[in-house]
Structures are given as C-alpha cells and as structure tokens.
Image (cartoon, rainbow, N blue to C red; front, side, top):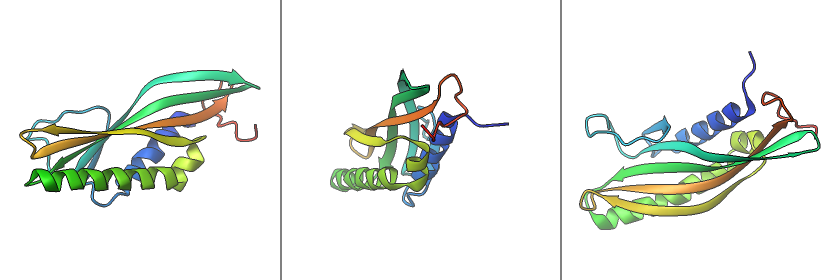
Length: 148
C-alpha cells in the first residue's frame, strides 16, 4: 500500500530531528510528560498546525506550521540559556539542509523561535516554528506530483 505524501514528509522530519545527536528522544505529537515519563534530556516533540491548500494546474499545494519543542534540563540558568541557543541553531541547520526533508517538501522556512522557562529555570522549552510546503496531485494525496 502507498504512503501519503504528508506522511512521507513527517517521517523525514522525524528522522532529521533524530539525527541531532544531542537529542535523546523524539516524540510525534504535542506532549507534556510527567517526571516519571522523561528518561533523558534533551528530548523533542513535533506536531503540525492548520494546513492551507491552493489548487493550481492539477496540483494541490499545501502549507502548514510545524511546531518543534525541545525540552532541556540544566543545573544553572546561564547554561540553560546557552543550551537552548545551541539547540535552536542545530535544529535549524539540520532541518533546512536535510536531504530527506528537502526531497519530500516543496520548501521549509524557519519563522520563529521562543524560549520558555519552566521550574525555577532548571528546565526550559525551545519552541521553534517552521513553515513547511509540500504538494500532491489534485485529488490524490498519494501522488507527489513531481513532474508538475
């Protein structure tokens, strides 16, 4: 059985995030774990938000915001801030240059990043937003419409 174009793209994104060696675990979907569920920091989760569609020349062009959260835990607030900055740079470099993501998409762009501090500044979340574009043949989400 075939795989939808968006599923191939999301799998490529997950593989790209997993390729960042400092990230210990990657979860699909928005997640707020309990302390017992977290085995190692840093860990990441990713999910997509509302998708837009534009049909042109028998191709459905799609766009959505991809949200990636990376949870980090450090001993000091200074180290934590530096770690978040490094994670943001590593994530951007990886996603914007990953062959699998570039092949499965029609473009990906980093739009924003935010640092959210939790627990008296010993844990924090990097939340990065990327605008992702992809396409499939009109009325067929399994056909990547590469010839168009």
